[in-house]
Length: 290
Ligand code: ATR
Image (cartoon, rainbow, N blue to C red):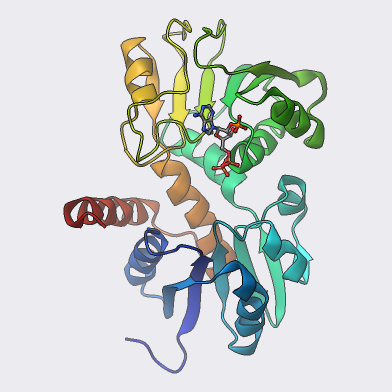
């Protein structure tokens, strides 16, 4: 029941119709019996400043921020967490008595999913990260914060973009930059964790993989593909054929949402409830072709 005391959460994006966030968060709210509601608002780029003003004026409690607003929103906030500042993007805003504070929960999300879904409490000394876009930025930040990682191979189709990312994140000698051109096999000897942060393999081109054939993945490796549409990607199939364990991006999606939920409400949500709700919404979307 929405009452006069109900606190409002939401997501702003453009487009925003396909987001699983309302379903995930409202399921967690219901499970915990909290007096919150989570909505989705389509906000065009030119409407972003007004949307943040509305957040203040309407005393909204919290917002998730998604494509294309994650960078632009930073200039409209009263405060940005050091983590979000370093990553260069905000995906969560909390209204602290009129002060809008920006956070980035993607770095937390990837580490928490590796722990929760992949059983990786300690990360392996050698990690490969494919991609150098926005998603790779948050993941590289998360990996660099882990002292047990000795070497990160940062591989991207555009080599200058990978070099720029490595330099921007201050990776130093731990980050080894390389190319990712479809044909040439990668040397993944000793790599215990491979993360795909490119969009290759994502709907609507699900049969593509960022990993060139013959790349010699270690059977003991864990492969995390941050893609979650489809849930079982071509890369995951390749990795499984090599004997490796795999995770899709659903866990990371849910864990970044869980951290946002905790920032807003002060309570850690039931992550399994959020995961089940997200899966249900994807199944429904697939059935109705929306
Ligand atoms: P996101 O915010 O989701 O990371 P992005 O910033 O557009 O999106 O980054 C997309 C990533 O996928 C980049 O690493 C991109 O490689 P380039 O920097 O070379 O563009 C990668 N990517 C997209 N399509 C690709 C393709 N067909 N082959 C290889 N890499 C691709």
